[in-house]
Image 1 (cartoon, rainbow, N blue to C red):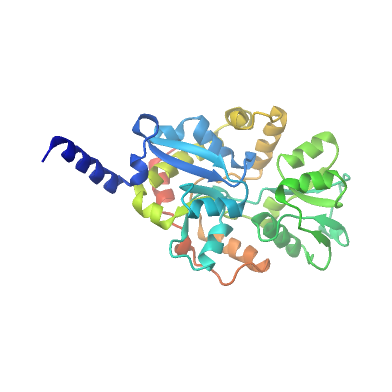
Image 2 (cartoon, rainbow, N blue to C red):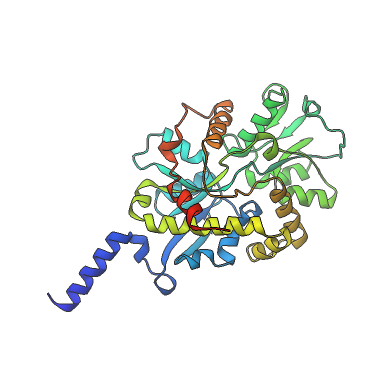
Amino acid sequence: MHKRTMIVALVFLLCSSLGLAACSGGNGGNAKVKIGEVTRSIFYAPQYVALSQGFFADEGLDVELQTTAGGDKTMTALLSGVIDVALVGSETSVYVYQQGSEDPVINFAQLTQTDGTFLVSRTPDDDFQWDDLRGSTFLGQRKGGMPQMAGEFTLRKHGIDPQQDLNLIQNVDFANISSAFASGTGEYVQLFEPEASIFEKEGRGYVLASFGVESGRLPYTVFMTKQSYMQKNKEVVQKFTNAVHKAQLWVDANSPEKIADAILPYFKDADKDIVLRVVKRYKDQGSYAADPVLDEEEWTNLMAVMSGAGELKQEVPIDRIVDNSFAKEAKEKVKP
């Protein structure tokens, strides 16, 4: 066999065994992985830690991060192959499964384990009770998304029917919710950070409660990929999960100040004081997952939240679209 032909054949065999992504170039021959994040958020601090502290690179991965702006767009990018891995709410994988996809989207590493929104009022209320919301105009999140479903789940938990007991507004785009509240829409609003902290700092709003604390543990934001990609690139997915767990352990072991410094390069226009305040709030309430495993209790809670919101055709068993094998191996390999 001609030497060049032999080399080409060997490269082909190597790519077949390691997966196409492992032969896609990148820095120093590292496997290239394209991540699409649903939004740029301090809520995803461990992801930026994995990047800034070199944990992906240490695993031999050349990670390219892009913000795909919205659950629908993120899932479209994943299904069409524009990205390899999506960081998005686990409910999106349920929606794809319910549509009968032949190549389902598989959750493999959890990043956040609670809802990330807060109840914000126009006026301070040191004696707030959930019943105070009855009859009010409430500016909620987009219908069908995890924030809105977790919000409705919390309201029902406190005996409030979102559709009957409130003037519920949920037709405002995610990006415009904070500006709509600032311009006078609603007496209460369900806000993500950093908007909640910015409103507090400016004296234009007051955080009364955490929907994350109230709705309990959920597989809220998860790294996921297509089943076909996972089957072809098992080694890459394992290395990716190892890096995520390294970042989770780093976040757990370090102060909010150090975490804020580590992620600031990804929030260049942000007020450092706000970034620190947000990191501390999320860390204190346990929003950052301690490990990448998506457990049965969290999945059961997700099914209850989606069912209560009328978004679940039928319960999806965890083993259909969750593969915890990579997360469990990462926990064994990566120690504090």
